[in-house]
Image (cartoon, rainbow, N blue to C red; front, side):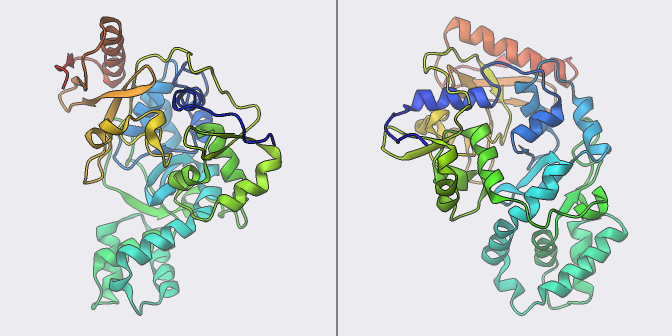
Length: 365
């Protein structure tokens, strides 16, 4: 570990993040390898965000390989980081889900605790497991079946309790490009034919986070995964790490061999997927999201819009409409070169989605 003397400015931190996210230059990694590197893709909305997240980062990406990963059970959609749905590889599902169980436990206590007072969680989990392993169930179906033996309970709360107590994966066609379907669930063990890792190492979680999102503070790591009390983990790993300070004096940890480009490194215009973890994985998001724009891309009801990156920073929002149009809304006037680059990125999204639509760059504001 080096002494924490070197200061990394916000711009330098942004360039490091973009390099590790393959947003300075696209990569030819296989989709499964990139999903693993990123620790999963936020997939709260189906099906677009994971596909668009890979499109921004991969050369030559088409939707079929990701759909195939889901159909072949090499990737799954499951509640993980921050209790939200993520698309991860099958192997990561088996290790990350037990590591992040405390996040689901906390969500259950805070959101549904009063409605579940006096409930036997072990009995509920056992019954729910039997039901979803008999056949995949939607939460509406599962809640109704669980309430049949607990008529004084709220079916929705029972279904959410099962979601927190069990590693429930969403089965295809949910999440497939161009098909889709209701979110029906079974257990990861049943779907993948393998047990969860009984003792996954927490240290590995921290190291993987730094590889994809560092340099970072302990608070950043907590924001990404939802687990608390992670400062001792980073302190334990410190002999294997480098340390820095940010401009506010906060201690940053990083992997010695991870990329830290010069802050003057050019950053290309990119269209970032809705709900992308690029914007959700740091306590201080200003390395890519200017504070004055935060409320314009993160709504009060929990929606995170697709974002336009210019020079490494959020400079607008965008959306792919049902009519297959790509609409880009800059927050301030764009230079001609940046506007042309945004149009080219939007055309790339259109081609990915099947073409036939048009690109609209709205007036800034």
